[in-house]
Length: 141
Ligand SMILES: [Cu+2]
Image (cartoon, rainbow, N blue to C red; front, side, top):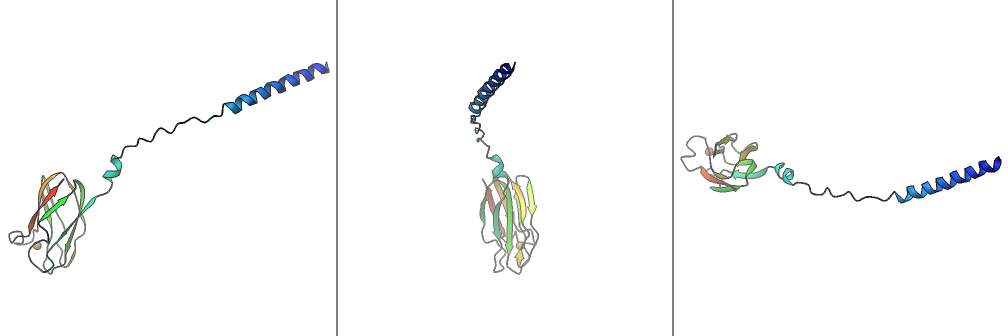
């Protein structure tokens, strides 16, 4: 009777060894890194482009530039007025009408506008400044 037990144990060992070999050979890694085609649209929409506009520092009723260009999308208008006359910037066109704070001798808080491609006017809405020539053209591409 004892020899039968030994035989059965030997058979079980042989079986287990065989199973062990199967497990080893089945552990080959599979190549699954094919998800590298990520769209790049989200990266572009996050950051606003900046557009610097300055009033004439000497006190003339004009901007330092009368022709500006910007990239379509969210645009941060950074208006600087070093002169001792109060000025602001108003952006107008294509259904947009946005104005910065009026400031004297300092920078206005940044004004963010969403601009579509097209041509816009920018001018100073204070007093007769626009009539005096404090205006310009903004082309958005
Ligand atoms: Cu002005």
